[in-house]
Length: 145
Image 1 (cartoon, rainbow, N blue to C red):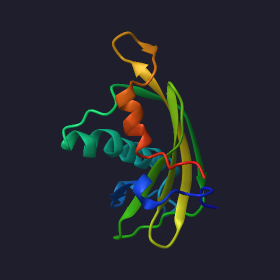
Image 2: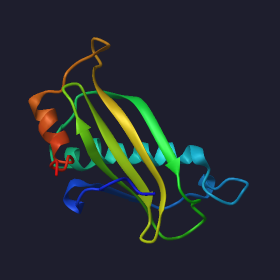
Image 3: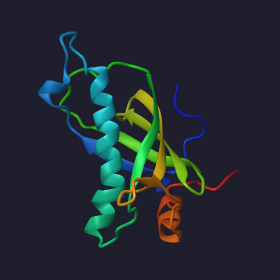
Image 4: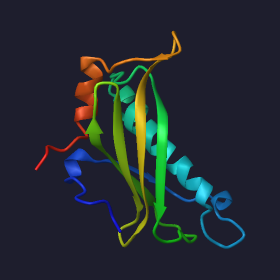
């Protein structure tokens, strides 16, 4: 089942990738562990790829405090791209929650959520988001209905 009420396309980050031979396990489908890597690649592109190429440095530091994944269908070997669509479902003073759909044009293979927390790397402690970080995170948070 997809996420309840996924947002319009303008609030989603879309990361496309092709499967690698090493992603396929002995049962002939993508191994479950690979999904965390796909989510990580999507997050990195969302926060450090596109923005940095545009000259932005949107987030100074963050850590994952929780992941949840629901597997919906196996990903079988394919030459067609798979994508991870990502958006923010909740933003707080020092954390936010991401939702993901791992999918192609026809089906959803997995849904997932991650909770990310603002982190001061130099002082090794939690912190609050800066106004600039909150503004960037807000780009992916659809307005409440």
